[in-house]
Length: 243
Image (cartoon, rainbow, N blue to C red; front, side, top):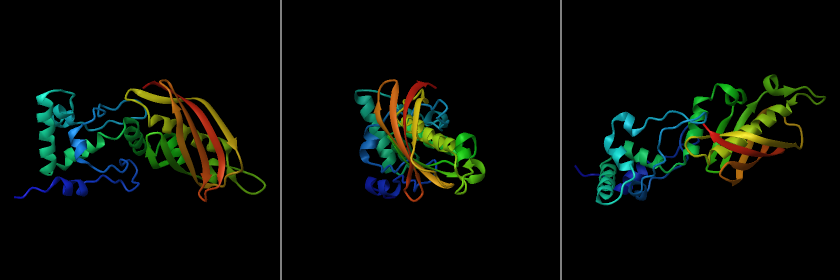
């Protein structure tokens, strides 16, 4: 039987999540991924992490060996074996190697949002990831007048505390995309500037990390209505602590 070429396999298994919650960001497979396997695939830990099915848990000893840092002829042989398996159509290995290029924080954050979609503050806000990358995050939430509203002379508006909570979630989460394994994030300082009342409905938080030091991240975010009108701007100092 003719084996499929590596290029056709790469096209067939390009991992594009289509904004599905919990899926990895768009990660096209490239042959170089199989050649240089990242070692970031250690077991997840911490509040922002979820247990993943790792190669050693499935008995895939060849993959475990290929991912273990080595040098010399042994490493070249293991990498060549991984490439041959990919060319033979080992789609599970292709997925694993592609995921190795996703930063730990990005991968663990997606897993957390899937796991906590209906519980805790994420569930309360109805928050979900729209876009995520290292140092960048867009989340949206459904804020209702019955759960997050506040009466006013012009009808119900979203309570300022709910807006601050959404902002805090975005600011701490975008900092977590830069976290290392064994780290989690906690808010040290939060500042919110309110520009105008927000109407109940879909609100969007766009967050980014301006700077990260060894212990701290400096994040910023805007909170917008669905039509793009900015209702608040926020800044935070986020601390990295042991998970």
